Length: 233
Image (cartoon, rainbow, N blue to C red):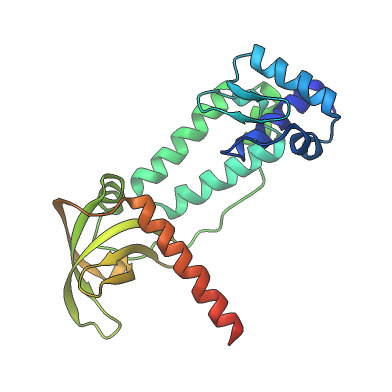
């Protein structure tokens, strides 16, 4: 493995950890000796990577070190192309435009050989009709970002409409539908709301009482527990 590729691999491994990780673990994951690992860490530090720690205590990469796009591997380029094409097809207009613009920015700074790989990528995304929606998903995404409550006019499976005040904290994109994951004040529980069943949406000025990250964490725990229960049955 070339030294530049080895340093890139070490950076990728460090990014997986938010807490200090021992040099021995890093050496095992990157497939080098402990002595080589220490040299590689010193080399990255000299290039501007803020890697804190020392032998016997562990190392952690602090945010802020930017990896030049030219160091993307060919598989990473393919993943970016495929992901961008999927978002361009499945996201709302704002996300679709952002995906196209992001890919263009990456292409502009790639070496010629990798730019050719990007342009000639054979990973395609099939076309399907977009779900019929009344609401603008950009409004929902903004409410989630700003942790604002939503007042919904929502139709159930039988078409009966109810008014709900919810705390939206995630938006799921599926092949046929988009789903807002939220805490429902009426049900006092987590609920999933299909965007194609939202007849009206009003963003309230009130912020919900809990942080978005906390709601997402509790929802994930609930989902894991539900799956375990289903597996046992």
